[in-house]
Image (cartoon, rainbow, N blue to C red; front, top):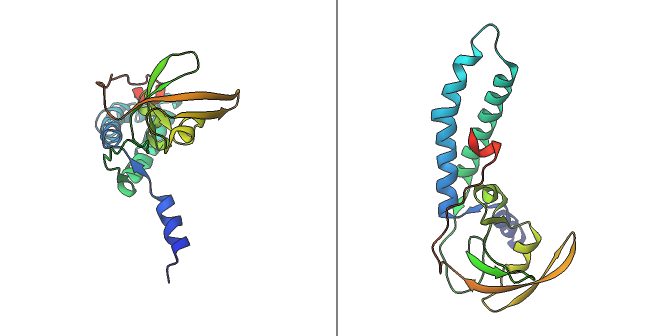
Amino acid sequence: MTTSRTRKAVADDIIGLTADGRRLLEERVAMIRDVSLPLLRPLLAVPDRDERDVAEFERLVEEQGRLEALLATSITLPDDDDGTVRCGTRLLIELPEGEQVWIRPVHPAEAFLDDERVSTASPVSRAVLGARAGDVVAVTGPAGTWDCRIVSVGETAPKARRTRRSSRAKA
């Protein structure tokens, strides 16, 4: 018999990805499968192979498998826009110094995809989830507590495509 507690635990284990995040992760898997691994395979067969190539090949195979499993078991979040900040909602926040920054709280699995995405495990994401435009929320982080004002909620400005450049994203 399934209890409400069991249903809640199962619901908490479901990973929700934004539609854009899902697309970017699928592109990453395709890049690994169709470009990176085929380039490395011939390097593994040579007698004096570089063990760094072997390590990179193994890392990419593991990453591909992890991402394929994530994509197979996750759901795509709906584009709900009732003005409340949820996982996947794009919002403009104002930092204490007055700087305004676009962020999008997302599951940690897609947080690395660009500079706008912020893991829902981060202090700023935890503070803004459930808030609405105009709210001021307290963000408690390692350096202390600071106030963050929610300027705007939703897709109100064109997205700047800033993809993070890391060794993980290059391959």
